[in-house]
Image 1 (tube, rainbow, N blue to C red):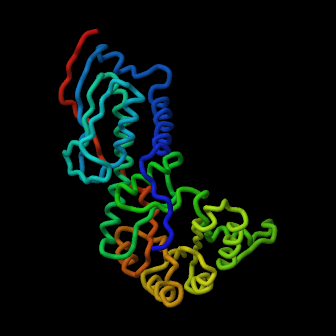
Image 2 (cartoon, rainbow, N blue to C red):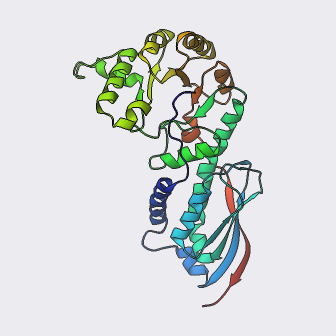
Length: 316
């Protein structure tokens, strides 16, 4: 395995991303009027205890965000997780407990469940892909096919499921795709047009001339190819990774054979046509990386609910 993209953890930057989303979520739920149902029915000073429960098997992700969301809605809410992100759950397992003002808890309930359900759904689907390729040399990677504003959070959920993060954004690496090459073919393109190999060499020169010093040696250069002939041409140009687009297992095996013969330091990434039913055969072809857009754009939310355990009412 060659150069690696930055892997996302729950750090200050991720916490900041989440709090921005929390503020938006609270605004769209409460607007200026607040929670009319809770205001009408819940006495001031009412206290209670509830648990977050998994309704179906899966992998949990997003627990640190849940704590931050509760504090944003009501500083009196106390969050007690019983699991850690990345742990598997069965239907009926208790994930966390929440204690404090009933009004705040009811107001924050959907916000917390939406967060946990969405991120846990991504972690759960990722775990299925990771388990499908167990025993091979391949790693499962995400893509940039993410929900706007949620990218780092969704990529964090992929890590919770055992997957790996591809580049976080355009700022992190060079990835020369077919549309970068096709753009130069138009009449209005200004006369630029490259083969994949020419594009790799030009990108390398640009990085050496313009990138800050630390990035000159660490910046990943990846290029997409559609055919074995393009692979043969591009390998001598020195990419770190070659993305093999929409190749079947037989083509992938041949690509690995050709790469191994002369340029074993170059990683091969399979992309396109990757499903749970096909990913094992792709991994067994010998590629090091398999990128799967479905991890983030097609994951179904994990069913997670809230159950009340006790409720103590104190009149103020």
